[in-house]
Length: 143
Ligand SMILES: [Zn+2]
Image (cartoon, rainbow, N blue to C red; front, side, top):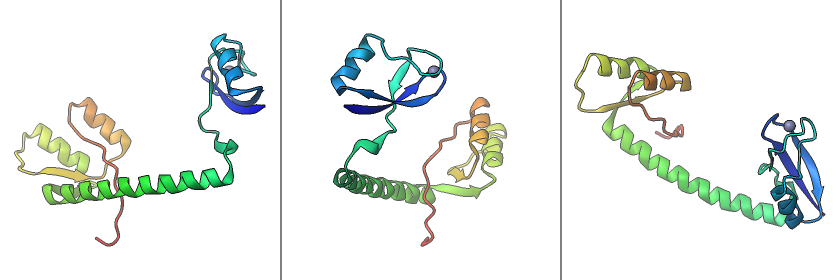
């Protein structure tokens, strides 16, 4: 027997269901025989956020792998940050203001700018046709 956490795409209900095997799940899923316990929708998918079935050793290995991955990503981002710091002007929380003034006043700037903005700000800039990129950022207190 195998327990899957299933997610209803229609009403967002997540529920557990038992199957004889993963093959049986695939078979039932293909035949559209799995439906939501709440709304009866057939748009039910295996919820990938259910890591409870893995053993302790296995999960330890995964954590280690993720940690290495995380360190690698962090290193890349650090290099990226260095590049941005060297090539862009920091405008902090004035980012949206500065981005707009460059865009609308046609201010010529040799350097790009970087700073902080909310997701909503970025959305508004995009709607106004102003190009802004969201980059992952690590606060590094050593700098
Ligand atoms: Zn449902």
